[in-house]
Length: 228
Image (cartoon, rainbow, N blue to C red; front, side, top):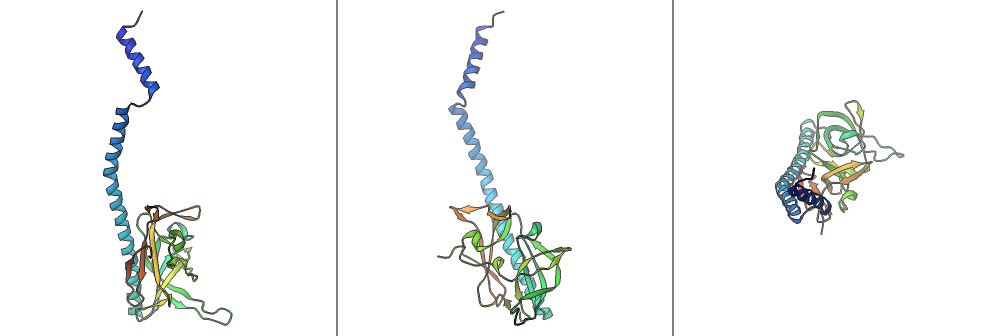
């Protein structure tokens, strides 16, 4: 039985459309849908990123304030601890407070630094994908607390950790590190095969927060990420 001429024409049009790919109208429609989606998702993503940055700053300041208040109230040196990258899943993200004491020195081991004596129960984790960063990761001239050469090794939940630290004395002033700016660098990042990988950039430059801690008050003030 011969097919109807209309059916034969439809079949030819269908075969032709398969061979020529998308039409201009179809491409315009697809692009328009993508633009609409970006206009909806983009502001929400930016708002979420800004909220995570603000929350991270608040977490850092809360721990600094907690450590300073504890040192003044008890008369015991108190440290804010920053978990190093190799300290489990929370490495580079966890921050906590602990009482510390200065280790004895000797001619063979001068200036040994501090040792944690009593960990406080509450430990905070930076929100979202925010992490503590090194200056090398963001090409910053400001050496961060994560790069200090003295490390504490507290045990948290039965697991050994490694942490950089800032120490408040009984007067409420920072006694360690001494005689240098105290920089905390924060930004969206992740660890990939042991390497720190940044997740956001602005005009090709790393996107991060730079906090400088006042050693007299323990206040963390936001500073320009890049120095002129």
